[in-house]
Image 1 (tube, one colour):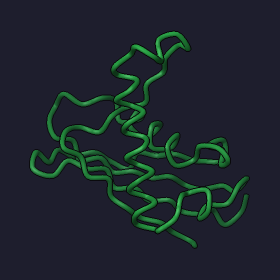
Image 2 (tube, helix red, strand yellow):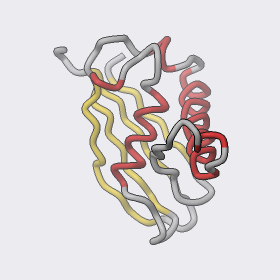
Image 3 (cartoon, helix red, strand yellow):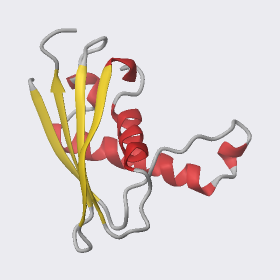
Amino acid sequence: MKKIEFTIKCKSNPVPYKRTTRAKKFVDTDYHRYLDWKEKVRRVFSKKFESDPEYILQKKTKYYLNITIYFKDLTHADSSNILKGIEDAIFQKPLNDKYIVPRVKDYYYDKENPRVEVEIIKANRN
């Protein structure tokens, strides 16, 4: 595996990373929306590659995570927070996102087909 590519289709704008406190986790609707988004990212990955990320990607290995975002409209979140959410979804335990070099390649607007195109490339060296 040298390069993995997949697309996450959205009905509206992609959901950004959401930090929350332990107490608010149970009542914060934005946080629950973020958790649902992370599950969707993993489902799309798993469906495309017929396996979860932890069985395809290697632990303690450097990867480049590149995304291109197609927002539905101008009411979108910060693109770096979209990237962080995808990073958290794919590289959760037993993987670790400390070995990831994340980058937003670009973003555009596509009212009819909002999505995030994801590219994961294994680095030649760790």
